[in-house]
Image 1 (cartoon, helix red, strand yellow):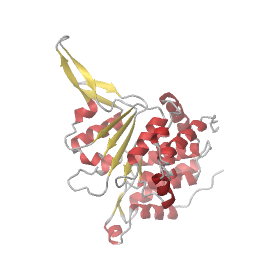
Image 2 (cartoon, rainbow, N blue to C red):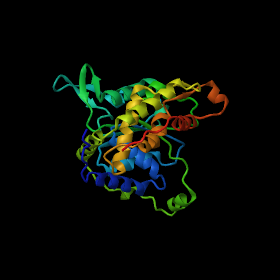
Image 3 (cartoon, one colour):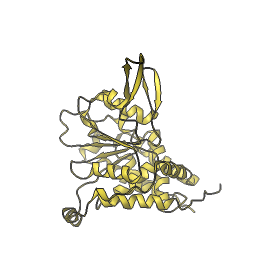
Image 4 (cartoon, rainbow, N blue to C red):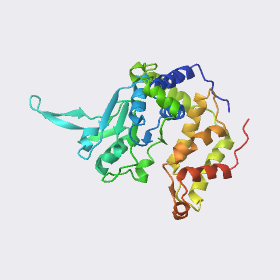
Length: 315
């Protein structure tokens, strides 16, 4: 099989990363993985404590890619129709006219998704999967590209509705920014962080082209087997109750292709799979009773799986 040739389209992707770094300081790895997920056509869950830059990251990504962006601050009274839209009767025409909801954009920031009702969560997650909404029997396509970046606070979750596993599986990656390093925090205090300086460097049409290029990244046969072995071990591991779904398997390969693209290669290597494996799989597996008794977290179980499965030699 002939490897596809890549053009200088990698340069705009690097420009996006550099622009986002202006607003989010010291979180380069998270920025790269977020851009990789978008290039792979996936949705992103930012699961972290308040005030570490989750919303700032989402806004900077939207601005740098010239994406039409909507933001919804989720609360218990947000309705599914607020997202999908509704039909309103117009007296002068005697007809019902569709009023678009907040999902009719390129990038939807779903702030604190765990604070809204399961019914509203389901409405959003259905759009994420289907890329369309149906209102009063009429189907409307959402704009392309369509990306959801949802934030969730794992602490102070009393009285909230945490996403169940079936809905978590709709997100390609789950990222945690964490606290900044001391040097980065001092730079933030000095005012180095300036979101208003983020410039649009690519258009939504150019993003679609980049996504198409990423799909064409070459994957050796041995790497398909490698990903399959990793996923199979999550399903048979004695300390894991719920392993990776087929959707998760596909997401691993999509993210590996995207990371390879950002690393200026037109082919995937085992290191690409290993680097994105925790971000793609950490929110998908459920540690079993033995793991919880041993105080083992999902990240530690995934690291063990990576150590147990030998990486193939690629040419």
